[in-house]
Image (tube, rainbow, N blue to C red; front, top):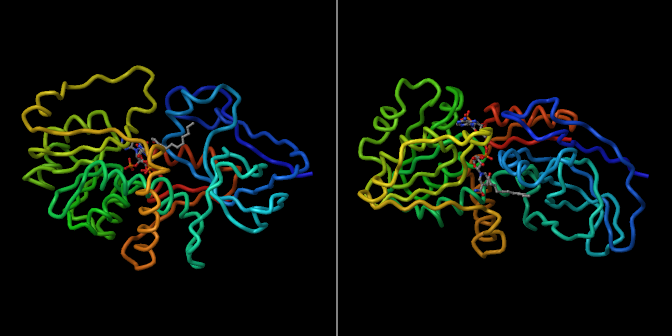
Length: 331
Ligand SMILES: NC(=O)C1=CN([C@@H]2O[C@H](COP(=O)(O)OP(=O)(O)OC[C@H]3O[C@@H](n4cnc5c(N)ncnc54)[C@H](OP(=O)(O)O)[C@@H]3O)[C@@H](O)[C@H]2O)C=CC1
Ligand SMILES: CCCCCCCCC/C=C/C=O
């Protein structure tokens, strides 16, 4: 008998998630039936979407949603070999039984020397979000000035690096001086700490006096109000996330933006990476991201929390900005 541990959401979060909102449970898994396989999580992902989606997709006491890189430890399905690795959306759990549905194999040419955790980060959902959002939604091209916030995180750090590879000028906003230094190291032209600048408007103007062609939006709220005013004519905005608003129980109100959109002829589009998973750009993007890493053109950084027992702390830490690069839990 295999015992599986899972983290549940005790009750819906009010404001920022707290440690007492989570409970560790344990259950015995039944023996495998024909066609089934048993997997153990090796790395688990903590992502901002878990906060807004918990509101709409979980009820009190449910296991927290989420993805992992998992290894097959027993198989009664000839299509899945013991020892092979898959990405699965099976929630915050150490072991689970699958019939193979929804398992996504790691790319076959995965280099031996690359951590498999990258399948949750730069070569996984966040990396692909950056790739699709920048190239398909923002349609960034050589010479464009690109602005990205949450710039040192899993998505933002890849957005900035791809934009540089495509010949853009890149400006990043982030929440600490150490993160600003990191952004400069990975090639951002300009970076600033939004928590310490005296004026966001001035920081954006200093970084690019001529304004912005592309804005990769991860934060929303006040940042967005200020940034939208500095778009160039025909600017494109990819609305990827709004992390500054995820803990709100009362919606924020802000300045009305329609005049900027009319007189600057802006285009703003929200997107979810889930809608791209079966499109050719997803596979192409994954191949390209892996190749750029192998060629040394794309840097990655991971913020690893050790121990499944520390997963809630890792999640809370990521939401409050502890991470540079992708926040991952190592079991
Ligand atoms: N549309 C889609 O399909 C997808 C959207 N996303 C979105 O992309 C964004 C980035 O996600 P991801 O890269 O995984 O996460 P990150 O790795 O960037 O981690 C989250 C970061 O958010 C920043 N942050 C937290 N609170 C605030 C705040 N109030 N204001 C500004 N920044 C804040 C912190 O960085 P700092 O120190 O800079 O404050 C923190 O490190 C999120 O909005 C997420 O929802 C992600 C994946 C898919
Ligand atoms: C029940 C929904 C599970 C969603 C999993 C992946 C969501 C990725 C899109 C992220 C959006 C914002 O962060």
